[in-house]
Amino acid sequence: MGEKVSPRLAAAALPGGSSLAWSLPNILTYGRVAAVPVVAGCLFWPELAEARWLALCFFVAAGVTDFLDGYFARAWSQQSRLGQMLDPIADKLLVASVLVMLAASHTIEGYSLAAAIIILCREILVSGLREFLAGLKVSLPVSKVAKWKTTVQLVALGFLIAGPAGDEIIPGVTQLGLALFWAAALLTLYTGWDYLKSGLKEAISDCP
Image (cartoon, rainbow, N blue to C red; front, side, top):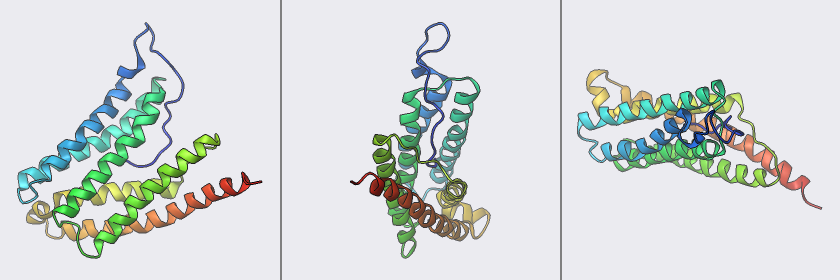
């Protein structure tokens, strides 16, 4: 669920003529998209511990598919433009929907809403930059800090999805999630500024 340049770029079909649209990597990506309404739906009942644990299970499963789809696409050379398009969309849909539902349930509230706004604005910024740079045929590689940001962000959201249900088992789960959430927001500011500088550099160099 993080912003990454997908490795799926080239092939049009699998051996034997089967469409890559139904290759395993793409099916995993479809599953991640399908998990979005399920996770959001479970979080409509944040007061129910069972709903939170179910949401967490689907969220973790979606995170695992985020790793596996790219791995299998590279390992089996099942790369496609469809996968390249859907992969970042699935990640952003999942993160955005979870943030909205956690805010609606007051798991994220007060000053922590600022961290959520930072993360959402950065996602929009990077998407816009990638679209702009794609028109210039310039790639926007993912930095190591951005990968760390994604990892911290996903772990934080996992703790926050568990929320009060997790607190009943291990006290402090929500507070730990909020602390990690702010750490992800600070890393988001850093990486967002880094990407913005790269985009501005290309935009300025393109001016007469």
